[in-house]
Image (cartoon, rainbow, N blue to C red; front, top):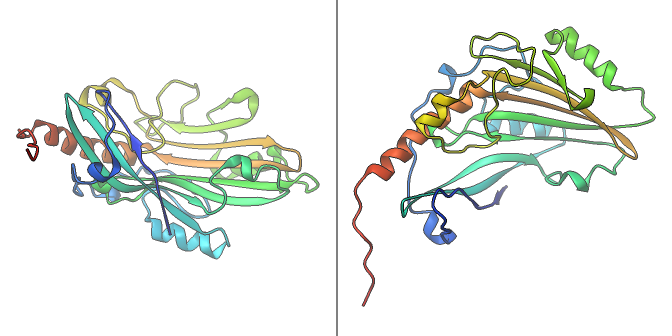
Length: 256
């Protein structure tokens, strides 16, 4: 099952109808994900970025939390020319798309995340898991953090007043101990110019654990983003988009 969305990115204020957007540009596969996946120990339910949506979907279905793809039309407008690309860019457990629809429940589990563009074969770049545990069960943020620390070592730093624990690694693979040492990109695919890519000091991978207490449950959230893989996809797709804009085009003619 797929859910269709449209999202627009514009460098020149314009909006194109969906029926026009779908035919403007094509991005071809140019990246072997296996050559750009970070070497890291992090996983969620045995899953890592770089895998396919089908692999993740099978695991989610086995757990009784099937996922659905989210499709969208990515549109970019530069200097009066328009590029657009239809693709599945994300996924989510059915029924848990809106966080406010489940946070009053006593218990839940869901998986969501981001997919690469066709330039990297639409593999997974980010995986999130949300878990709601009833307050009367003896599962605390400290006990879960202890499990993660035993598995991965202590987090590099803590954010959000002690409720978010970050294992981020720099471009050399070193664990980052201060926020801002390296940066995180967008959660879903977004075009970047070469100048933008070269001006940022991106991390290579980030794993996060955060917790929040609600009226009936304690929420635990886990997330992995393979930034090396994400950026390889963005670079390959952005180069093709740049080539699209550099190709001379003739003005469209009206039927008069």
